[in-house]
Each structure stands twice: as C-alpha cells, then as structure tokens.
Image 1 (cartoon, rainbow, N blue to C red):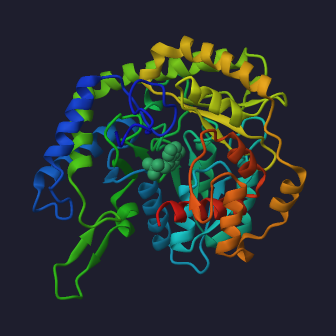
Image 2 (cartoon, protein in one colour; image 1 turned 60 degrees about the vertical axis):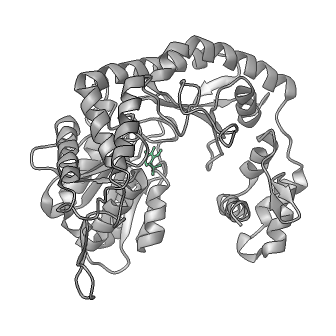
Image 3 (cartoon, helix red, strand yellow; image 1 turned 120 degrees about the horizontal axis):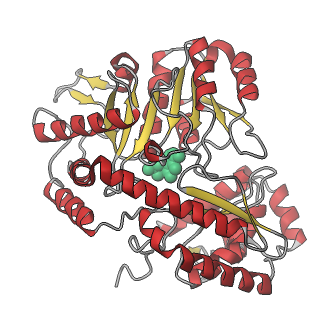
Length: 457
Ligand SMILES: Cc1ncc(COP(=O)(O)O)c(C=O)c1O
C-alpha cells in the first residue's frame, strides 16, 4: 500500500533512477546478501575481514575490466561519494590557495556538490554545440588561464544528459603534460563501455587518467549503495584516507566518507558481480546497447522528435519541435506506463527527454516506440504548455536570495506545488515543469529546495 505510488524498479519501463538486468536470480542473490550483511560494519576491516576480501575482489574485477595493473580502489556508497572523494583527494594532494577544477559543462552535478563542500572553484567550459562533447581547445585555454591553481581536470564516459563520451585521450594528454590529476566519471558507463565494440578509449588505460568512478548500483545491476573509486596508484589514493587518533576513543580510520557503514551494499554487490560474471555482463551490455540503438533509430525517424546527440552508450536524449513540449510528452508516457525523465533547458540547449536504458528494456523496444508515437500525437493535440509572459518575465527578474519564506510559499503555490505552506505533487507535472523550465537555474534550485524543505517538515 505504502509503495503504490512508487515507480516500478523492475520490468524495464522506468527509464531513469533504476537499472534492471531482468535476471531474477541475480536480484534474489543480491537481496539475500544485502540482508545477510545488513548489520555487519564496514568501519573496521579487521573486525569483519570478509568485507575486506569482498572489497578487494570487487576492485580486482574492476581493475581487469577498466584498470591497469597496480591500480587501487575503494567501494563507496554511490557515484556522488566516489566523485566527492576524487575531488577531495585532488584538493588535498596539491595544497594551493583558491584551488580550481576544470570541468565540461555537461559534467555531473556531483562535481558542483564537491566544489561546494570542499571549497574548490568549478571552472566550467562549454561543450561542442553539435556533438555535446567536451571542447579540448577551450579546456586547454582554461587550464592555461588558471595555471597552478588547477588541482583537477574531469570528463565523462559518458555524460548523463546526452550519453556521449568526452575526448578522454586528448584530455589525458592535457593532464599528463601538466602533471595534473584527471578524473574520468564513468559512473554510468563504466560497466557497459568495456563491452561496446565502438567505444573510443576512455578508461584508466588511457595515459593521463589518474582516477575513475564506476557505479556498481547502475550497470553492474547490484542493489543501491555501491560504487567504485579507482586510482592509478596507491600514492594518488593516499589523500583520500582519513585518520584521527587524538581523542579518547578508537582511532578513526576511514577510506570513504562514512565511518560506520552497513556491509550490506558491498556484500550484495560482490555476490551479484560474482554471479553475473564477465560473460554475463557482456551479454547484458550488448542487450542494453542494442536496445539504445534501436530506440535511437526509432526516435530519429519519428516526426516532431530529434536526438540531442548520437548515443555512444546506453543513455539517450531527444528534443521536440515547437508543436509540443517534452513535459507534456513525459506525462503522456507516464500515463502509458513508462517513466521517462524530462531535462530542463540549459543555456542555448532546449529541454529534452532522457532515457537510461537497462537490459530489461530490450524486449519492449517496439512497445516503447509505439507508445511514444501515441504520446507524441496526444502531446501535439494538447499543444505545449504556455507560461504567461508576465510569469516568464517575473521568473527571470527574481533574485532568489531576496525571497523570504512567505514569498517561497506563494511561488510554490503559483508553480502548482501546493498552497498555504503545505506542498503536494499534482497529477500532471507538465505545468510545474514548464514553469521551472523558464526559471533561471538559481531560482529553480531555490524553489526546489523550498519544496523539499516543506515536504520534509
Ligand atoms: C555520469 C554520472 N556521474 C555521477 C552520478 C551520480 O551517481 P549517484 O546518483 O550514484 O550518486 C551519476 C548518476 O546518474 C551519473 O550518471
């Protein structure tokens, strides 16, 4: 009953947030290991040596897949934690005043969270308009401009929003020439791209790549709460560790952000990876890559739709023409039993629809495309949501820093997210999303924070 409004995690019809291998046995093994280890504590590897063995074996598996001999790694709670730690380690390895990291504009928001947490300035470089890939010349210029203040360069394999792989070899050369750390965010692609026949070099084997994040809870299809952060050498990893002995209790010694942590996600990840194995992952990756390509072909051929970029992994995004909007289209897909994720406009890029394609979606690609065609027809018939011009003007003129609680209550009500200080989700999200889409990013953030705050009061 409590779960009745939740998105389904299995069945291949939820194309964001969840990953479904379609292998019931692998799921069962993961659930069993998760339960078995839920009370074991990953805080101290000497107290629970089986967790240490599993962590080292998982890192070993990944080293074979995407690493180099001598690479080391840690299991973290997710992609964001892996990225936070990569940034923190880079900052602490090179103690400079006003540290900077140079990032393509398509890099995952987790890097901006790291910038916020660790006081590292994010210098953002525009990507190529057509390919949506990081721009090597502009990046070189940024590295030159910020010189010794740069502690980290980063790129994606692939980017979440468009599913394209940044020029990792060229970035590796930029980093190696300067003796810089270079992190490849392969959180979402790292367990798929090793099996892609067409992917360009992107992993730790590329010269100049010093660290890499790859999430197990994505395309290794393990229960949530597991990612890997790999470093090329133990020396590069060292600043990631934290120890504190100067208090009366145990010496705190952590490789990752959490201290006490459930052994469940790690044990579950180990069990699922052992069960599926390299061959199993090759089969799953082929299924998801093939499904993505068939979806891309079908979408490219559909009237009113256009791919935002040529997909290079298992993610894709597409935009629509002016006869409809992506928000109405997403609602229409939900009404047909598919969750697709609207992405708001970004700079000159219009809003798009994002699909994260799991192996379990492969068998229902024709059904998806039929339903998408019907959803497009309905969205065209409804026409795009029109946001009143005075609201657009007000959104663009509003400085969120000057808004008080009462103003946020009023704005949330206007946006259709509740009233009288209480919040609620409307049946259809299109009017809300269309309004958020015209709000500048800072206002969008502030409104959503106000919303979350009220949801959890
Ligand atoms: C490329 C990329 N990096 C980082 C993350 C963040 O991962 P998590 O949500 O596990 O923290 C994601 C999540 O989708 C991602 O796609």
